Image (cartoon, rainbow, N blue to C red; front, side, top):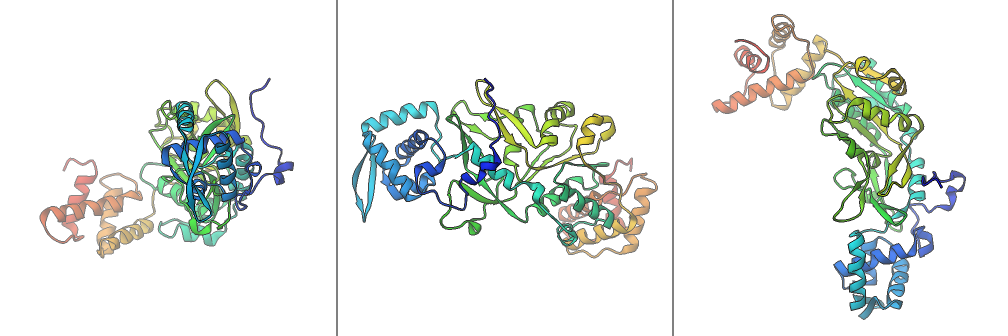
Length: 429
């Protein structure tokens, strides 16, 4: 028998609950009642005693569902009523319930919001696909207003965002590839999506919502909603040289005994940025071979302990950034699956002037254009360097650091620029 869970039949997706509708019964949650009982008992053990209303808040269910769970636990002599606050019962765990909770915690220490089903998660991710995002020039121009970019690049960025497909940014170091990738994610993040706290698969819990990654929009959450879901901006996940093969799999914690979703699962419906491709501890070949099918078909297989595989959506805009030659680093078959390749190269003189002016203004400085022109001539002439987007910021930083050391206000003049150049570039002076 194939152990892979198939994607749900979207023809039946109308039978699944919406995050905007609050389930009023255990059956409407779409998760086995025993799992909800176990979580509730562990919450009562670790955080109780409390009221049924507080149980609903801890487990992120409606009062009616919490009352049903309380009745079930009470019927099994696992909890008892210790009093009333108005019409709301106060709960406490029994000695029998304490023994059962300890047994449950030895198998899994998860005691948080009730999970959603895998089918509900798949259905919601498909509905919120980044492929449905539509952007137009005003949005792209507004997002990139803080960067100095030409119209050709802006048009390429907008076209790439509307594709919903993978993007490869390449070019020499220091030209702003990472800044471009982060800005692309801001365009996508202008609208919001629903993210579950956790999902349940065969009794196993996989946590997904991560406050360090997902920016919650509480004001966009209806009062009577399914609180197992969190309204967030479309997420952005960035990884660089620290990326390993293990980070692409479900992360099972042997102490807590539940799973944490991998980075690409947390990035679903948003943007995943792979920065400095080619410098990770996983080789580009390993990474790209693994993601040939996900990038092509929008699905990925993840393994649970014991070898059970589950099929999840791979619904995100993947942005690769590298200063290595993609033609030498990547297989042609994989390059074909990256629909958009954008080269970001050296600055023009005018772009350098504008970036230098903007960076200087943030420090309260007003550079003389003639001095900047001399600087450009030095970089392109004796130093034999290209003009790169990082250079104005880095040189002005050098000027400000030197002024701080000398205990005086920073100023941009020939002497300060000369010292900055000699400290920043590889020179023998």
